Amino acid sequence: MARDAGPAARRTGPAAACGGYGRGTGCWLAAAPLPRIPLRLERVCRSGPLLAELAGRLAEPGPVPVQGVAMVSHLLADGTGPLYRAACLDDLDAIIERAAHALTC
Image (cartoon, rainbow, N blue to C red; front, side, top):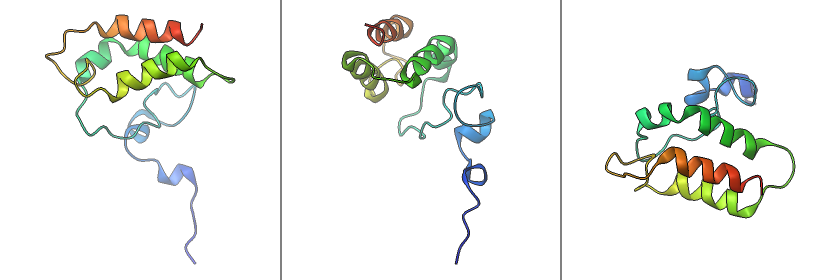
């Protein structure tokens, strides 16, 4: 019978690279699956603090407004958007700020 070594032994990918899972580890990408379309890392790095704040709002206990969740889902799923395409001229910071605001309304 195979023995499960637990979550600590299974940490690979982004979580392992940044030191762990969950809040307080300094890694907001910890539990994210690897994208099928490469991220525009320079944009993600520039917007890192705003993205971390957005992730924090999503992780807060209790219900979150559906419009904010929909905005975040669209940002993450839109392969033609500023997270994935250099040619996209949309302001990533403004999109993140609008989504974060929608999560508090």
